[in-house]
Length: 127
Length: 179
Image 1: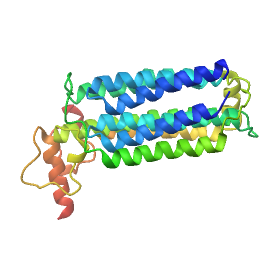
Image 2: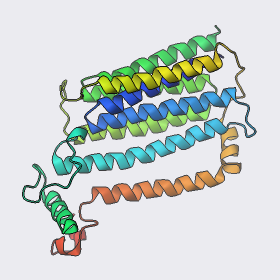
Image 3: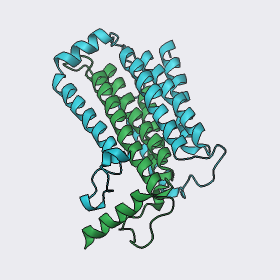
Image 4: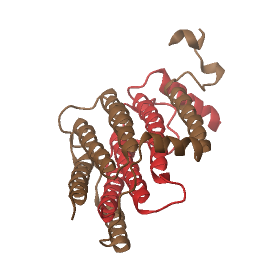
């Protein structure tokens, strides 16, 4: 087995994931690109398990299992955030998310009581 | 080049090709389906690398759960079925950073490993991995369960709008009766 083949595969997948995270506007597609990066790391861990003779056997594969669990937790919280963003702003474009406080007078389109309550909450905090 | 190398090359090419389609396609749903192909090919790579348990966990959790969740999110955010033109930002910095990271890491790893050959270790079956997890890695394992609980509670709190508001903003009936 030539370890350079899976290592190079993992490096290329990581580059593709980074490209996707920076390139995509849709938040769900950004999450998919993050999954690509996590899988590249997993592939490095599993390949290192075959090339490195560690004191504990199969440590790389155990770490890969842990990373898979972390990815599952991350995708759950990430999707909750994305759906909340969609409920507030009726759009999941990441470059339309305002980085400052929203104005109090006009609640965002397509939002119900959630948006107005979030607006007043932010306003009370700033006052 | 042995059979193992050929298999690794073929599965790696499938994974990288499907990954490239995930980050370039104009169809949201197809991006999720290409992700299935990419993750499945990676599971095949794990099998060739004798990581049996990791491969099946990859199929179960990634292909079975994570991709389904992502497709749910695609549907819930009312994604169009056909091609959409507003998925991308201008891409020069992304191509520069992504290509730089990928090709730089690839060059580094090629330089480190050249064309050396290693023997495959004994397969990582569920028995061997379970022994390791419950003997050497028990504490991280337990911490992970706490992390999963925290993620669960966090997702619930995030997706319920009536949690975390000041008391004055709450509707007059009890919050539990509204939803």
